[in-house]
Length: 399
Image (cartoon, helix red, strand yellow):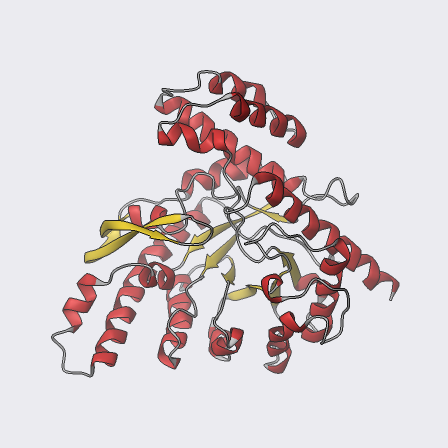
């Protein structure tokens, strides 16, 4: 029998100061090196004393040394996933892991830097005083480099659990970019301003989808079995045509490919995920939707509708007869306030009850990636995911 309530990390993990400072031309201090030592020992990172030797230089690292630092950062992230919950439950570790995007600048800049046609134009603030570099599309985009292959190969070599690769989708890259090239192109067409704007978005998106398909094909050829398509911008444009485009872009991206595909999105508008239904159910190869719910839910106990009002959107899946996989975000990732293990357990049990999805297909995860949190907070969040799933599993078995 398959395990009920398997667990996963949804994408990014925080970068330690010893990972970021060498790339910002900042000198490491004693606290940075002590952090590498304490976490390396605590996580059981193999050979971490080599990292300490490299870091002892403190500044002026060579390119080879920087690569070693990134590789160790990947190892630390994998171990954070694979040892999650060890102090709270005997069944430690996430079931589906990734190396926390440690080799990436962030989810937008990395792909854009590896696609021809973009020019960076400035920084934009996102959450928690984090910034990302926005780019403008100035010509027809084309494939330049595969920006995830090396990351995948290293992670697969060192991970002991099943690996997935998060890949930023075409909709998000389109939505977060200045659409100079396609807007100018469609300005010449005889149509209403709204229709011209949508047509520019659609052509840009579908051109990007073909490039991302090539990236994913090469990942599959390199051995990956599961790809998570990240679409945080799924609800940024809210017309019916734009919501349908989210599905069209996914189908274009995955066309002709054989792998397990999942979709992750987060932080929908006030209307919630209802805006996506039923259109997203047309994503032909999507085996699991992973959405956030923890940030909207209360911190009290209970598995009834009143106690778990923040998870009410989950009823949509049963309403539309959905029976495939679902990833439920049970931890709000933009606050250091943590729910109790009991609350996480209740969120999981409520999710199982109102969706009527096979518990073996109901994955448990944080709402989104954890890059905005400090490492100790991120680790506590992963611990809660594992421990809460174990508690829910026990309650299910004894019911």
